[in-house]
Length: 314
Image (cartoon, rainbow, N blue to C red; front, side):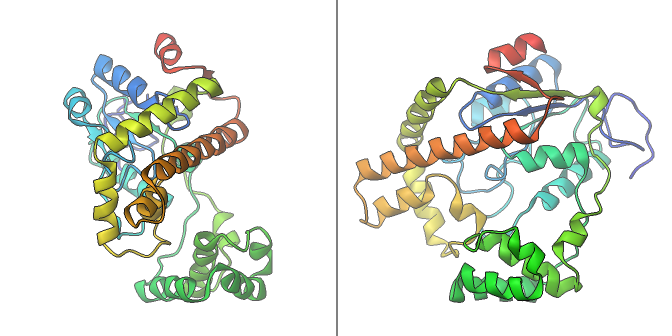
């Protein structure tokens, strides 16, 4: 992909992106502030690696960079996808590759976010997947909405039992993905995942930083931040999102806090109950993130207790 041989990483070149910094961590861990400080020091560009911050509408609720942050560094792949548009790790990786090909990542880009699969895709490559015709995609999503995940899981168990055995019957999104790949290509999604593509980032020249904050401090930051989100207009964002009339299966509808604030808007919960529920959901999400990072990223990542430690080491 491309034929430039610049070692500094100003373009995709003949090989992977050189000199990148990757910053991972759970929500509210300070990773975005660390990325901004590093980028401001070096003139690097910041690339979003969070699956929810790609969506428009949810500026506040997904903690996307605000005007002050945007004025300090170029930010890429934030808020550019409408909530009605299906989006995947593969779509994100293709966009990063296209930016690199055009030289729009600049030198030594900083990737930051909380979506672990984005980082493993950068470093290890991603399995090629077939193009899914819109009619097939829409058909299975309609079946999910009509019949529920468990019935679709039974269909998958009949047609691709090994894949079905690896999925929870309630995991509608992954079940639908497996079914649409099977229908579109005639091959199991496991076969497609067996052949990985090339790494997009050169690990040897990259800085890999994983923020692992102490739990009690992280919980305090989560609770304070969510209250500030509500004060900054998160409820209005959820109203706009609900007005789009999207299926509950769409990824943007699963953003942390949407269900709880929607319940408050719809009169199914008090404001206090919604706030407490959203904070609890955020805490659980942060715990899942931390567990995934701990188990999946491995020893090649430099683990730091806070953003300041990442800055001092960089």
